[in-house]
Length: 328
Ligand code: BDR
Ligand code: CA
Image (cartoon, rainbow, N blue to C red):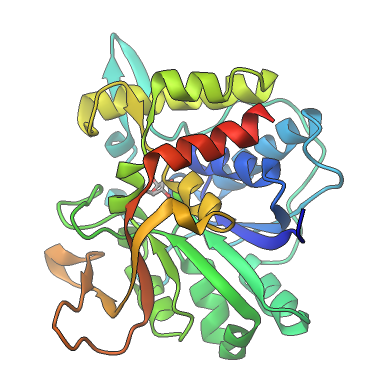
């Protein structure tokens, strides 16, 4: 196999972030160098705890040769209050047959483990690590972009050390958290603005692509069938996601799930999973009802591109990729 792609993951774990982390550890094409956590789906402490639980599970499944350092980052958005609306869990949960079902359980299942988060604040780790990197690095961000925005604001020169930034976020024809906005971008729109203005030209993996790359229940059960405890863990999270999709957020077919963050991770080594991936000029709305809405310059002569946007994804190829990774 050709050389592994070293990646940094920035995650707000979260159900699909958990499966994305496991996928990154499972993919022979990737080497996870370290992990940053951020507030987002759950508060920072829970995102960190959940990520450590996933690492512990991966360790006992034999997926980790050595400990992967984890750095806790931002606890709140750059400029917005962490007001009640940004903390509300009822957006992500529902009562089904008398049982509370979560899109992102506040605390993922786990057991006692020994690894602790490193002492350094994740944005400072970005600055130190990237400043001394001899090769440009790949970052996959699947939560709010707060950590990166802080690092880029304090040390803009790190841009030259980032080879590729893959971001799960935004939507063109789709929204989820408000009528107009996707959750990661709505959570910290000022951070999105900072990244879009940085010159990094991120690859955006938006809801348009992730909603096309859904998995049927029969598919995810088959994908994870031979992965023991790890597979049971993933299936339990996906079962809850599936119930909430059927209840609140129907997909192209019932009994199916989105795996937003997993598609973003797979795009790092299988960019062909994304289709109609076009260079665009886009901006994030910062005010009133459109807060967090991504707008794309649709003129015939748009302003200079500042991102790449994946309008579609290849569902069959995504299923095949996950089958290869987990059935290997
Ligand atoms: C994104 O928001 C979170 O709910 C998911 O983890 C994903 O990163 C989808 O809008
Ligand atoms: Ca996420």
